[in-house]
Length: 430
Image (cartoon, rainbow, N blue to C red; front, side, top):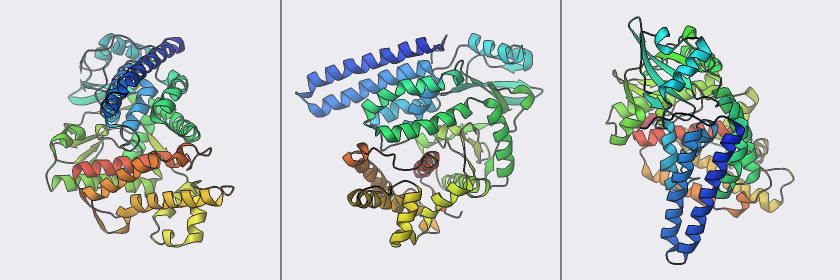
């Protein structure tokens, strides 16, 4: 893949890129309206393909928070047409890498030394490039290391990038503005944390140390002396990225072993640590040579307050959906419904979120669950598509759901999708 020689870091430069992308999208819509009369379905698909290509090309050059949002959207199979999912999924681990001179510049800024002055060897080309940074392989005193370098300007551009991506997202994905505003506020907080590698280092050491007793999981050792707020150094984990293996399929019993390890890892964090690795996409996991699940990225962590924990996990009570008063109280606390909603609104949103709670909570209402079960996921995706088209949700002036639930919901959604891709049969203990 061709390396990128520079990244637009100034607000004017980045705004210009966004404006140019918006102009391309406008041109695509004009072409679409011209072809729509002849074959509406084919024209709509071509529009999605063209928009997805143009947006990804632009965001992959900008890097940073806008590309990260695209990556998050690609994980939501109910929100985006397939063309966007396929393009935006590239942000997980195949974004265009930065050229070596820019990497050297970052090292000099952080350590006053070039990479080859700190390590015995250091690859000139990135071995992995994603939305916020890229990874190089290094060696030092016989140890193999993974060195993650943040792209220039990523931390400084979070707020302005998210402001500029808003009109594109609202127009193209037909999102509810009040929910989008709530969504972006939470995303901004997490992204600002993700750009602080010193915070990631601290969390990585703490969470991996506390989680090391979970069966069939392994975590790298981190090296503070070769890390900074823009560079993070850890052990290199030999194995294959989970995403690569999922493309060809993982046979039994390894698929079940990996799936169980992932389930246990997430629920230990949720219920014991109250702090969770909130970015469960395949690019953040390695299947090691001894067939364990390697967890390699604690950049996005959602800390869970005790108050929110009690409100959220109350939804997993199997008797809740049969108790009208308790259900209403739970939905009010999580802002699925509001006290000043009309009776019609309360009835509508209670029915919608009751169905959602039943669907997503189904794996918890049995001792074992088969995530290869296609009918279950077909039901989940069909309901998601139905909800996405609901005029009442799109036009609601109120955000339905508290912002603290955003990353927990997305964590479960990402976890379920990986377990489905693994075709794993899980003991659903927690």
